[in-house]
Image (tube, rainbow, N blue to C red; front, top):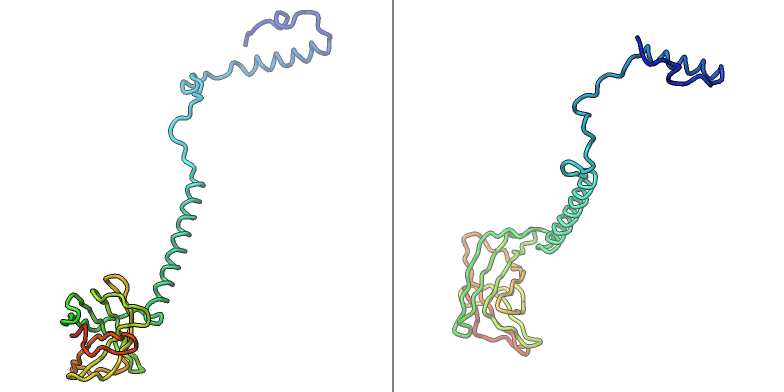
Length: 202
């Protein structure tokens, strides 16, 4: 393969050893021939500007992991809170709901009694939502009574109100046989004395 003359490239003033070394390199280059042509895709230099959007997958995955862990922690806390604040750590299961209405002594008052399933001890859990009973002065309170006819037979607990709506958890220490429909009343104790006239009744 012909190429440029060696003497034209290096001149004639080289030391004998250097000339011999360069001649060997020159002969090898001539034997290898010219390099292959540059592909069209590489003819234009790459742009310095990034093409497309950079996506940081590791960071994103880490953020998702942190958010998931936080959500699980909140869910576990919320579940524990609800379980601890439901009837003795158990959810309240309503068996029957009884409406109550105000008497002449409290015509604006209303209430709803939710009776749960009787426990082994014979107690019947009650959830009561009261509306329209005013807040009482210190040392005064309301009391829920179970009645038969016009006679009070069992106290189901005492409570106080705050605002227009109050929800309380009470308890009937009396196993109510199925088919029996006792009455319920709410009375008020003021200065240690029970008012004879009921404020709420079924």
